[in-house]
Length: 148
Image (tube, rainbow, N blue to C red):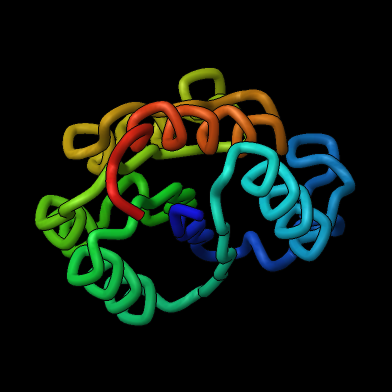
């Protein structure tokens, strides 16, 4: 099975209690299980991580680049201003799909800019937890036939 790393940024560990009208009622543990099951159905071994720490997230991106592991990344608030994250992602060696549960373009104006999108293969946003399923399907398609 092809390994895929799903990384979630700040405050996503609070899913289920954080603004359920925007993010739904699924917890981060629920989301991780949904990702693992969706990945398994696609022939992907999915590992899900979450951090509120920018340095830790960048370390995980470096780890993925060194191992040529595809990423599904919800950078959360780092989406809009973390040039350090953007620079780390520019060193990627495997597919990268940026994902958001809500649609940032339909929210506050400060959320409209993504410094990550320019280095990602694509962005999927606005479909709640299904955004992750769609992102994993995209990774499976992009890595089809690639060595695991």
